[in-house]
Image (tube, rainbow, N blue to C red; front, side, top):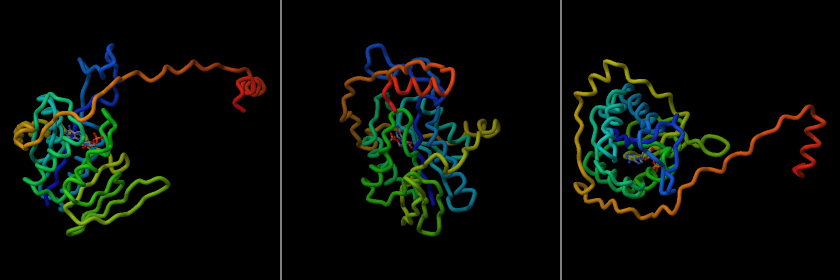
Length: 248
Ligand code: AMP
């Protein structure tokens, strides 16, 4: 079974994003970029399934600028077998990503597509669900555990107040939640080996997908600045303060 793993290049999770002065978006100039953390978890899960003998090949895919090659090389260094970059400098919305992934899935025929539950750049949480709809295949979102058994995959899903277990017939779509696994670091020898692994570069036009955005961003703004706290001498003073503020 082949596994397709879409990986997105996003601002590194340790970086505090800065909003552009004109409010049109987030400033990406000279900012450290990395693989979306949920996608690292997806790559790790695919590798674990391959190590268990449940998968034979892992194909990493990224839709983004030429620099997304670095993200794909990271996936290859972790253990993916080959990579496909769909190169574009446009901002790509989840529907367009899902359409490209559907076209790649038609070509590659993976048994599983493992995506992140959301990209930390846009927090959309849409691509996996849209892909499942476009492919007409079952989805197990917010995966906490993934077990492949023959032609089916059992996914324990993180839902409000517990775990829900679903059994999906493959080909299926899975999206990863935070507790699914802890991704490995790529070792130096594997980073070197990854440079020799195949990486194909394509365009959205090769898959007949129109990337024109459907949404218009009106404004991006920083969250309101939190007011400073105040230290009080003792519990009595705290109670007084709370009463004075009218919140108790
Ligand atoms: P989103 O729906 O944007 O929150 O993204 C959910 C998941 O879809 C991500 O964790 C990735 O696995 C995948 N994805 C979204 N955008 C891209 C992209 N440009 N390239 C590759 N994968 C993507």
